[in-house]
Length: 133
Image (cartoon, rainbow, N blue to C red; front, top):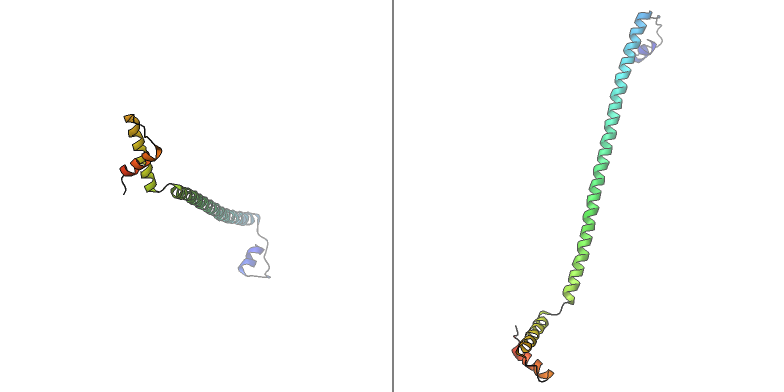
């Protein structure tokens, strides 16, 4: 009762002792209010912790997805460099067409069973028969 009077702002007032029944009722009321306050406060704290954990998990998932995309971009960049190197190392298209024409000439000669008389003759006949673009 003294605590209740102090909370209400009455200081220094003399309070007569309560009878046993009134004291038990006041104690039960105080205990009930304290229990409700503690349960409500605990629910708020637990909800806050749950929200923070969920937020951290979401940020970690986003960070992992970002890292995976960055790794994929790096992998694609390396693959692009390798392909560019291959393209630059490939023979020019004119040279490739010339080689194909020479192959056709050699195949035609092999089918005919007529070997070229001299190596220089094969290249002159190939140069004459190969189409230029």
